[in-house]
Image 1 (cartoon, rainbow, N blue to C red):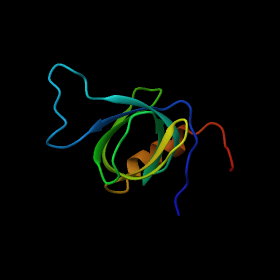
Image 2: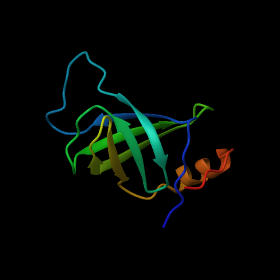
Image 3: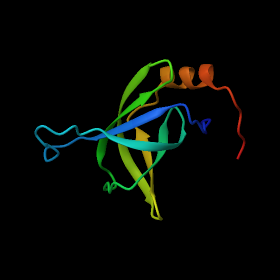
Image 4: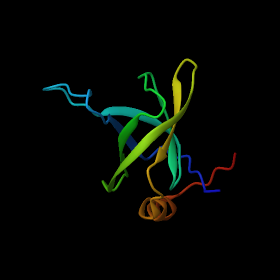
Length: 110
C-alpha cells in the first residue's frame, strides 16, 4: 500500500492518447483538479468524460516548476456533480514519490 498525498500546490493536466484524439490547432491538454496522488496513481476531478481503460498522459507540475510526464490509464470513475477518476500510472514513479515526500509541508490523515 502506498502513501496518498492530498495536495493543493500541484497542477495536473491530462492529454488523451490514441489514434482518434487529433484536433488540429487545439491544445489537447485538459486541466483537472487533483484529489490525491501517490507514486502509483492519482485521483482527479473533472467534468470531462473519459472511458475506462483509456490511455492518457498526465503532466504533474510542482510549485518549483518541476514537471513529470507520466503515461497512465483510466481505471475507475465515480459519478456525481463532478466526475472523479482513478488513474493508474503505467509504472511506479519513484522520482515522483521522492518529490512528493520532499515537498510535503502539511500532513493530512484521512
